[in-house]
Each structure stands twice: as C-alpha cells, then as structure tokens.
Image (cartoon, rainbow, N blue to C red; front, side, top):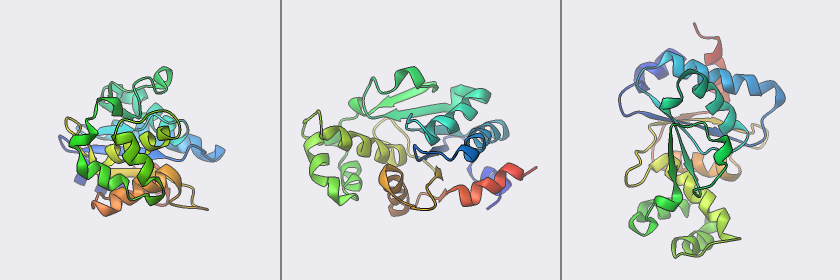
Length: 198
C-alpha cells in the first residue's frame, strides 16, 4: 500500500487513524515518526489522529501532527491526570469517564491478553491502585481501537513496533485487538516508504 492508496481509502469524514507504538524508539527513527505525523496531517483533510499519550512513539507521532493541526489530534488516556503536561491533543478521552460495566465487548477484547484477565476484571469491578493500574493501560489500549460510548472506533492503525521482538507489550495487545476486529494496520515496514512519496 502506498501513501496515496492509504489517503484515498481513509481520508474521509469520521475516519480515525491510530498512531502509536513502542516507548523505546531507535535514535535514527525519531525524525521519521515526527515526519509521518506531519506528512499525514498535511496531506489529508478529514482524518482525525489518535494516540495514547505515552512517551516514545506516541509522543513523536503526535508532535508531527500537532505541528500541522493539533485540532485533529486526540488522545485516550488511562486516567484523568495522565501525562497532562505532555498532552498535545485538542481532544482527550479518559478511561475514568468510560462506564466499563456498559462496555462488555471492550472488556472481552481486553481479555485477549489472558495473563491480565483477572486484573482487568478487578479494575472493571472498581479496584484501583497497583497492580490494577496495569489493567487501566491495557483497557485504554483497547479503547484506542474499538472506541466506547461517545468515542468512535479507529478505522486504521499505524504502529511503530520493535521489529527485533514484534508484537510485545501494550503495542502487541493493541495490534491483536486490531487483527481480531478487522481493523487494517501497518507498521514501519510499510510506512517508512511513505516518507519518500511525492
């Protein structure tokens, strides 16, 4: 898929493109993440962009988008005060405002990471603090893809993954949710080539 193909298919009203990935970004890739954010924001008209407001890939993608049009940037955060000083988005959705008891599909999809299922259930039932904070991050990752009441789902996901150990951690969970719910996605093996597009 070329950048032109991507924009032709996904730059439409209501489209939400998820931009996210690993916290550890290779030094030689930092500028590429920011460049992609700028390229997508400047080459599209309708598309909204979403991240999880995490350090690393989320932050660098967001810097690029915000440089062009921060009004089209949204973040989904695990709790209301999460990294508020680093939040570049015009629109912020907090997991604190999602009634998880009314979102069974969201909870079920988060169980995809089976080792966290009991913590997720505890968080949904109202438990807070460590170790349930981990569950809030995983639920936030699921919301980034599927949305929730008042939060539209993503229509495409662009990832920066660790290609030496792909599909791990929260990024891996988010990718698995995309696959399970037929949300198309690409990682840097695809989108690095977009940076050379006309």
